[in-house]
Structures are given as C-alpha cells and as structure tokens.
Image: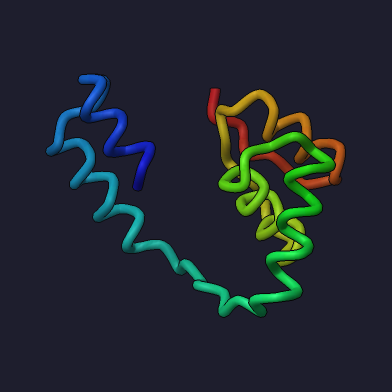
Length: 93
C-alpha cells in the first residue's frame, strides 16, 4: 500500500487507478500469516543483514521463502536476493 501511496504522491498513479488495483488485489486468495514474534524477528533481522535489504524487503523475501511462493518486485536488490535464495520471481516487465 505504501508503494501505491507513493505512486499517487509522485503523480505516477491516479487515486482511481489505486482503487481499481486495490479491488483487484482484494479478489485474490491472499493468506495473512500469523507471526511467531521472536523467531520471526530474529530470522528477519538476520536475513536483512545478510542480504543488505531493508527490513521491509527482507520481510517480503522471508515470506516468499517460508511459504514457497513466487515474488513480484521491481527492486533490483530484492530480485538478486530472491534469486540467491532460490525464490521464483514473477516477471513484471
């Protein structure tokens, strides 16, 4: 959602485009994983430090690894870390 807000602020997206995207997103069968606080935070911090990713990007990578799902990103560093971790990337180009 932050990326969408930033897209509107930078005038790359309209608010109507964001609403349309959010509706499409809501229709997907998305699973929200319940965290295991200490174990998840420790592994998340370790992953962020090892990959030199932001904590946000490391969280995306950690979820993709844990749930064995593909990852969609345009971020160069996150793509490299995902490839190294054996995570399948969704081609957005």
